[in-house]
Structure formats: C-alpha cells, structure tokens
Length: 393
Image (cartoon, rainbow, N blue to C red; front, top):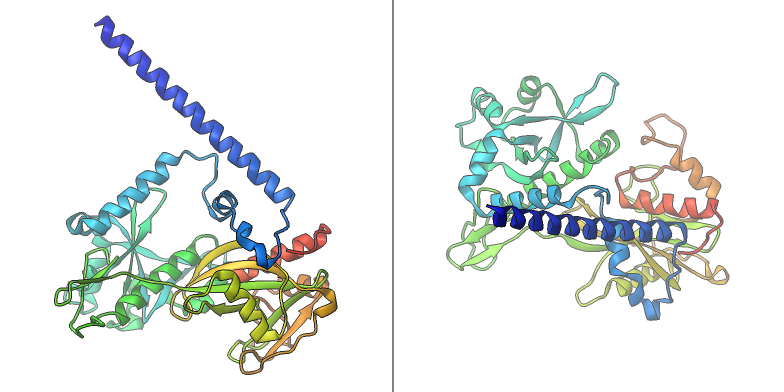
C-alpha cells in the first residue's frame, strides 16, 4: 500500500515538473513575441531572403491561439476532428448534434441581430432534418454536409448547401437571409467570416470535383467530405488551395495600392498574383510587382497568411516589400490592372475609416478590403509603422 502511494506521489511530482517546463517554454515564446512586435527585424535583401521565414516568428505571428491557454484543449479538438475524417460512423453520429451552417448556391445564411448587425446561423442535425423534409428533401440531403471543424465547446461544425430547395422557403423556416459571401465579409465579425469562407470553399470543391480526372468516372466522398475517391483508378482527391503572393510595397513614406477593372468602384488593394510552377514565393512576389507596376523590390518581410475563397480557394501569403525612393515611378500594365498609385498615410487613414462600400449615389470614395482580408492587415501594419516612425518592411 505504501509503495503504491509512493508511486502515485512520484507520478504527480513528474507531472508538476512537466507542467512547469511547458509553462516556462510558452513564457519564453511570449517574451519573444513581445520583443518581436516592439522591435521588428528588418529583412535582408531579396537575394539573401531565406531569413524572412523564421519558423518561430511565423509560428507566433500566425497562430490565433492565446499563448496563456492550455494546449491540451486544442490538441484534443484537432484529434477529434481528425477522427471524424477517418471514421464515417463517428462522423455520422457527430452530425446529429453538430452545428450545421446552411448555404444556398454557395451563399451563407445570416441572421439579423438586435443591434442591427449580422451573425452566422446554424442548426443541429436533429433540428435541421425535419425542416429539410418539410421543404421537400428526401432525407438524404443532410448526409451531404461537409465537416468544417470543431468549436471551443467540442461541438463538430458542418456546412451544407441547400441550393436544390426554394431559397425563400428556407429563409422563412430558418429565420435568416442568404447573403453573397463577398458582402458577408463586411457584415460578419470575429472568426465567423473565415468559418463561412472555409465552408463555401469546401462545398465548391465538392461541386466541381465529382469526377475522376484520370478515368472520368464519378468519385465518392467520405462522410466528413475531407476527400473523394475513384474506385476505378484507386485515386484519392483532397481539397486544394492555389498559392498566391500578396504584397504591400512602400517607398518609405507611401504605400502602393492597385485595382482591377472588375473591382467595385473606389476599391483599392495590395498587389497580388498566383505562383507559377517552379517559382519560390520570393520569385513570385518580385515578378508580380515587376509585371504589374514596373518596379523592382529591394526587401521583403513576411507578415501573415490566409485562406481566401475567391476565385476558387487561394492560399494567400502576405508580405511587405520596399523600393528605393529614387526608383518609384509606377508604370502600370493595363492588361493586369486598371490603376495603381501611391497613397500617403493621411489618405490611408481616411480610407480605413470607410466601414462599408459606398452605395449608388454616394460621392466617390477610396475604400479598402474588409477587416477579415489579409490585405487590410497589411495596410494597417504599414500605417501603424508610419505613425511610430518605422518605415520600411
């Protein structure tokens, strides 16, 4: 009996020691992040740019998880989601009590709040099933739900497109409105915009990948919707994103923004372009800036990354870059851009105050991508550096 108690005491002591070590590690990480934010490290020239992707800096700047939070909750949720992807029965069971976000022809269902704002709307599988049946579904539609992730409360999250049902009838029964995703980005707050963006991207992928590219035969999805499989060619297909570089160029006192002809009136954004086969991220960035505005960047520093659902699910890698003030004459390639020009800090500050796209009849105004877009983050980072006297990337 005494031996067992001694063993338990030693085990508890080891657990406490491990907890102290983990706490110390995250405290060191947090200190590093504070120092990194207060004293940004200037990147080296492009020709020696591997240092731009410092693994620890990327880990700390990209994560949205507070460092003071215990990791076990996150780990358990990620393992739970992974199990749902691998176990069809477990996923089907989770669907009954999971939260399901509805889409109609890839437009998410939103609800008005008492404050006049919008929020996402979700139903559990058990509550949604009778609604779908009353609207004319044969009962199998619910099984087409695609797993998105898991909430903080360990509740599985799914998305489902009900485009085959009458839109007005679904809106009436569910008490919401289907809104185009581009508009929804200006209406949603916090983590809701990335959530519906991920849902739409997965739904679109399934709608456009129903057949095997090798055999032309129909592919079958697993219950979670995390993959599709062709039995004829034994090929498994997974959702993919196209890598895109997006960059905010500065000459020290101004930043460069551009617009395509397809943009809404007055909208300007950072320059962006898809990676070509065989290119590095740095090569893509330099090429795009040279092609679109005729400038050669000198320095590059990494900012962050983001999934972007347009046009067909892109992986945005966001950077800052600088050009010499002596060589900053913009030469726009009008086959790429309608316009590109330099903006002062005052102009950017004014544009950031525009919270929604101007309506028809409003006076012309410069406005920027929504807060959820990584382009908005780049612009805000540049403006903050200018206000604090820290020019350059």
